Image (cartoon, rainbow, N blue to C red; front, side):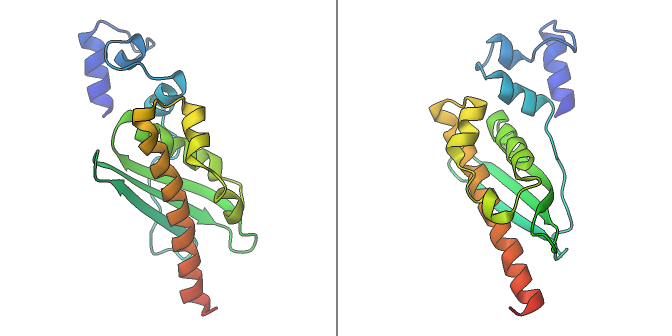
Length: 159
């Protein structure tokens, strides 16, 4: 992905410190927050899905082909989300939505992250209506990760 971006910048005569083609209006004009999270995604990666302290949410949008995996790592004593990771296959808006979601869930209680709405993510990223499904995926991924963690706890504790 990085090499594609670098090749595009080189072809357009942009230096590494200049904006991506999206930000100069050649393709689609994205808000600077989308570009920031696309160019510098936070918390990319994954945890061991078999770890009992990890909840995994895997969601997709068949209409556009976006697939998002969001994982949370929970402190079992406090119930706080101590870390989050994501892997997303999709457009820049999907990647940015995933990145924002991982930042927003860290340090919060599981019940608190369930209140994060796609509209808040979309507003933060200034997503156009045609890209709202990306923020919806992020919200769904958060809910799925929390659900997975809770189901693991029930299996582990028998409660």
